[in-house]
Image (cartoon, rainbow, N blue to C red; front, side, top):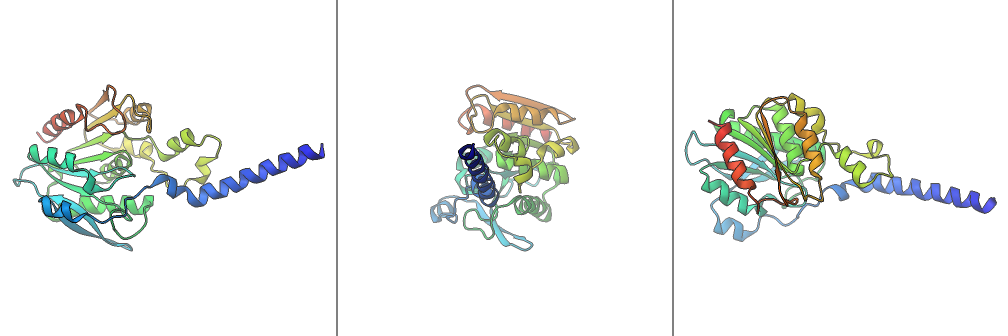
Length: 268
């Protein structure tokens, strides 16, 4: 009995230690920022510009901007996922240009040589500041399409809940960070431990913009059931497209065709 008691106490002690470790290090499991600044070849070989955006208490964040070809053309406010940097989305950028639209690719604090460290408050503040920058340089809300991928989809939902736009496009979104944490760490009380919650589930019902949501049926990182649950919370015009054999990265599928069609429809 004494041995069993000590085994039980040891197990409880180890579990509590694990809780403390998870709480203190959770953001290292959530964000995987490429630290290298925007490479010189990107700046030398392409015609995008680096747009510095001042974020209170952080400093200048450098996002990537390509102006619209005409005053009335669409501008995509694009927000990327947690393990990549904006400058890595050249396939997206090339497609956007071929569609005749401009874009502002948001970079986050702590990513690509930017100041700060990624956390929910600063990431969402940065996303909003990028939208506000578009307005300040003369882009009208009804010419802006908010588009987010993965973690960037949570940012896009936040911006869309706070600002006006022609439409909202989400690819591979999650319902909330809490729902993802429950899936990945069911043995921990994640609702109590999480610092960054990204409650898209609470914000989606507030969004009036038409919605296009795309998810791959083979996405092993964020199950398409998460995207469908988020989609169901939107109260307005919307379309859900399940990409056959689509994994978490879907730009190599028919997804761009659906996005282009949605942009044409949203801004018409």
